[in-house]
Image 1 (cartoon, rainbow, N blue to C red):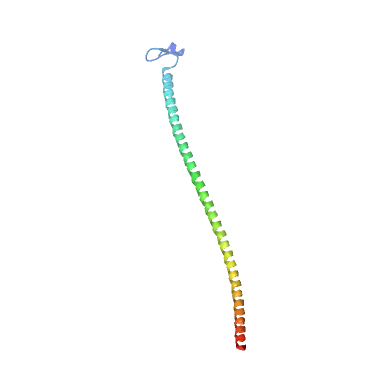
Image 2 (cartoon, helix red, strand yellow):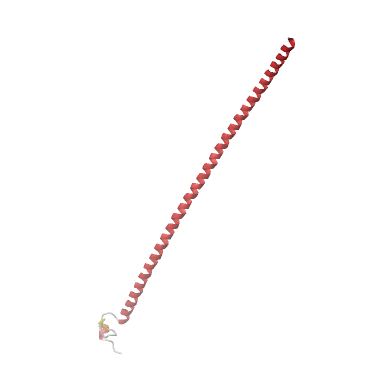
Amino acid sequence: MAKDPLADAGLHFDELNKLRVLDPEVAQKTTELKEECKEFVEKIGQFQKIVGGLIELVDELAKEAETEKMKAIGARNLLKSVAKQRESQQQQLQALIAEKKMQLERYRIEYEALSKVEAEQNEFIDQFILQK
């Protein structure tokens, strides 16, 4: 077969018999590549939208987790505070009990002393009455 002198010069005819600089196969592959690139760019755009939505969702979950964490820390601190208050109250009540026990002991000693004085006075009165 004879070589096509136009093909050697880099000129080709397409299916509509128009003169082209590119080989029809190369032109077809270029068009296919262009379409594939367009589809790829569209898919990348969809992927970015999906990833953007996922990132927003993860950010919301992170904020909710942080809020719950702060609530838990607050509850733990409140619990510690209540425990400290109870411990302080218990110490105050124990001190009050010790103070009341000391007061009771003082009253008991005073009662014994007053009972002894009363007995002595009653004995004195009895002796005074008997002497008259």
